[in-house]
Image (cartoon, rainbow, N blue to C red; front, side, top):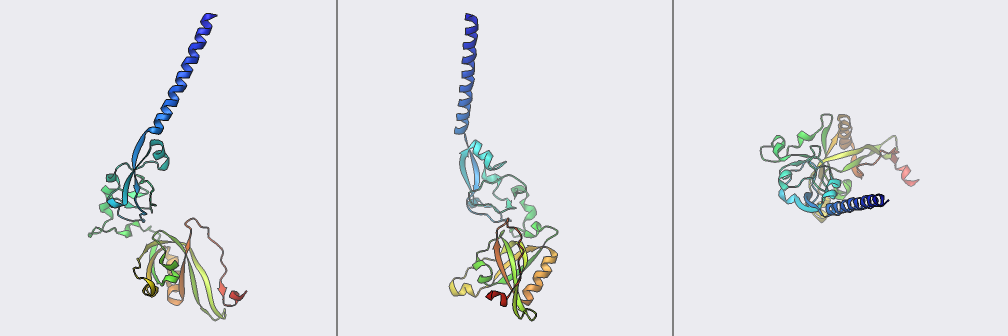
Length: 239
């Protein structure tokens, strides 16, 4: 009887020790930290990463694994690389070939002057086309590289008895955009050049539209659904 009680006490103590050790290991893991590299500011797609774009941040080891699959832990791993996606400010850099071109491979994507040759990043089934529009037609010059836009085309129509507006394209990516430096009245008279990534058929439609009427680019959430949009005429404005 005494032997049985002794064994029970032994197993209770052993279990308590195992639980205590597990709790200690868990609490110790919470105290363990590592340094990861994060974006010091928003970095557009297809941008050469410079040192001032990267900053180290100390985080818990478990948190680092949750944030990204393979976080960068030193500036040397990312500085000199090229972004393949827009990286938001404060987001950790991920060592993923789908996210960035690694520094040791950047020479394959640079021009002789050291700038990024964006033609390497155009999918074979896509084309680039540029439109030049005033601020009121490009969301007051607030569009950024990597944004998604819908395209509205307006033109006079004898059949409609006036002007008609159609949404001719939806969810078109802004591949590049010319910065506008003017202010006030000067900016209002400045055309901004916006380069769009489109299919060949969309390029033909857009080329005809920009040469026969007026275009407006409207900002669309990147994951926005395509909508069925009815053309609008002068008479419909009063309904």
